[in-house]
Image (cartoon, rainbow, N blue to C red; front, side):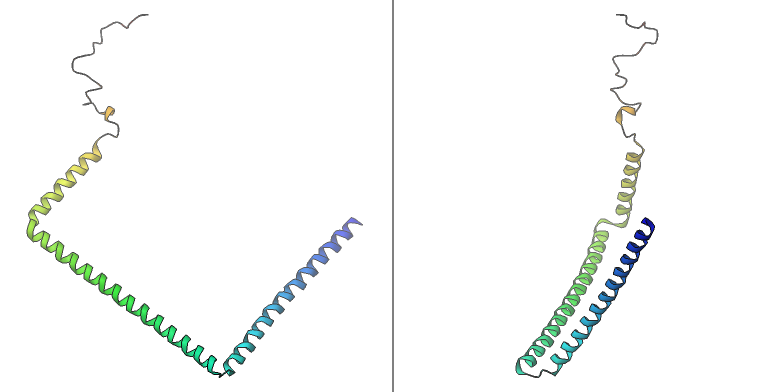
Length: 148
């Protein structure tokens, strides 16, 4: 009895799903059909207001296209000018400082960077740390431990 009720419930759910699926397809189909009918009716409208709206839309789209094209041209022009100015500035700097001085500077910067990278992260780990081995307090391994 319970098995039959579960099977009936499952069958009813599947039927509802199929019905819903068919309804959704029907609604989408009706929407497409209604949209196409509205589009056709709108295309047949040659009233003065409809003509002005179409012209306004056409002009607006053309203006938007012109603005975006001009903005793209201006951006490309700006980027090219910035690239040229950067190249000129770098060449002027090289001429002023000299290629040898620039190479020497780069070598020194690399040397400093390598030295920094080789240093221990915690200064107390360094054997040269004065806090770890103060010069006025030499450790004597022969001293006896302090007793309470």
